[in-house]
Amino acid sequence: MTAPVTKNDRITVYIEDLTHDGAGVAKVDGFPLFIQGGLPEEKAQVHVLKTLKNYGFAKIIEIIEPSPYRVEAPCPIFNQCGGCQLQHMSYEGQMTWKQNMVANVMKRIGKIDVPVHPVKGMTEPWHYRNKAQIPFGLNGEVPVAGFYKTKSHAIVDTDRCLIQSGEADAILAGLKPRLWALGLTPYNEQTKTGSLRHVVVRTAKTTNQVMVVLVTKGRKLKKKEEIIDVIRELVPNVTSIMQNINGQDTNVIFGNDTNLLWGEEVIEDHIGDVRFEISARSFYQVNPIQTKVLYDQALEYAALTGEETVIDAYCGIGTISLFLAKNAKSVMGVEIVPQAIEDAKRNAKLNGFTNTFFEAGPAEEVIPRWYKEGKTADVLMVDPPRKGCDEALLNTILEQKPKKVVYVSCNPATLARDLRILEDGGYKTQEVQPVDMFPHTAHCEAVAWLELV
Image 1 (cartoon, helix red, strand yellow):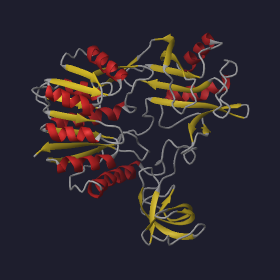
Image 2 (cartoon, one colour):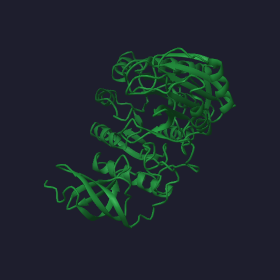
Image 3 (cartoon, helix red, strand yellow):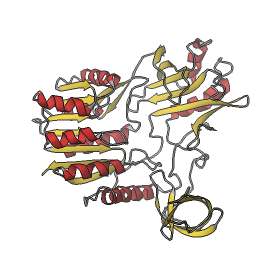
Image 4 (cartoon, helix red, strand yellow):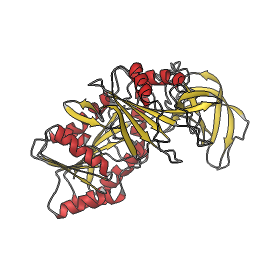
């Protein structure tokens, strides 16, 4: 395709859609232009920034006809921070776009004509995150902390975030001016000097317990007691203060070594009536209110009567497994991360479940072995990472043929791809229910229900 526009052109376009990361999409003679900040149903004058073989990029000069869903973004750093992509779109508009997006990928990628229901959203779509990962750095001699710019490791300095907890805001605003006095030198990624890399704040919505984790380059804390006192002053309901040591030159936040500074080593939260202990590095859904909505939907599709055996592939720390265990004869979970399996076993014991079994290993290897050992499933639950199900696991499903598959997805595109493979292998997708786990972002989760034909 020869691009019908060139760099520095100024043209008027109609924005039709959004990309998976929230940029507007306009087409000029079929040639896609990606426009940051654009919204569907908008007419705008844009400046072409760059063109490649099959697409280009542009920025808005003037909005001629605004989208009916355009609003003023309430966050003062919305245009710099990479955390949210859709604050300039009303929540009603976000729900409409997310439903259409899921339905479109089902048809375009999956070639599936399936009912896609309206998105289950939040009554109050702010301050929903129970985990904040706050990078600390320096601007000259001045400590900065906040969030990274889009596709960058430059820190946007701020004192609050509209989707994080109040406790995270208290740490964000209150710790910065006291760092020098506490002997906590902010880490410099370029020179590899300094001490404090991140502060992670985890809040338990149902118990009001809070964990604060200092991620430092080295083990030594010169003024440990003073640091503890300041954190307890800033967050009076803190119940756990931890230190994680990460001396590696890496983008990964946590190192392997975590130790207790004050209080308890875990905090406890509930999803419905299931209890979970959360450690500094545990995986736990960041929006517990919508997690219950998501898991209730998975439970509804599983339609358990108490007689079924369920296999939960990609079980993590057992969050879905334990939800299912209440209504199943037995649940077997598999997860490749050994620490997550230990967490799952501990959480099963915490809740008094005796009908669960967890094993560490690749699902595509463990599940076929279980079948050979006679451990078959009536219902298979999958909740894979964004890349979707491993090809070997999809082949395992098609070989073992459980009667029902419930697929929980954080990426509608890979969900549609995998549903196509399962349909070609003898399954029928009954319906898909999107759930908004991350308001004001372009992400959307979905639950699909498949039956063996």
